[in-house]
Length: 176
Image: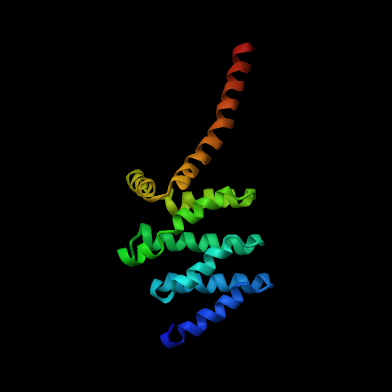
């Protein structure tokens, strides 16, 4: 961070470590890159962000989770809160699509984490209704087609059991 002339060497070192057989080392690489990005996005080049992107498909849940949560935090800080300007937001504009595409993975943990990320970082539930609508509109305008389908999937998935339960309850109360 204090020595930009060493950026190339540091990137190469982190590249090797991001593919290390040890889970803890891969995890620490992700944490290091994300922390640097949260401090100042200019400190993290596209190649380093690519390492984090790769780790969203890691075989270990702990590493995948850290990579997804880290990317979500960067997205919220720089895209939703516009803390670094349009150029930096454009640099990480791929994050929203990547995170939503993870919903297609077979793991239920991945699906639940994507739903959590959507509710906490992409369309934060803590915002007032008008701000939530702005975030949702921004996402619909910027997401690719598959990611838009994924925005609808959790709502449909959650609505179906609710509808079945309501129907069953009405049959039970109507028949008694």
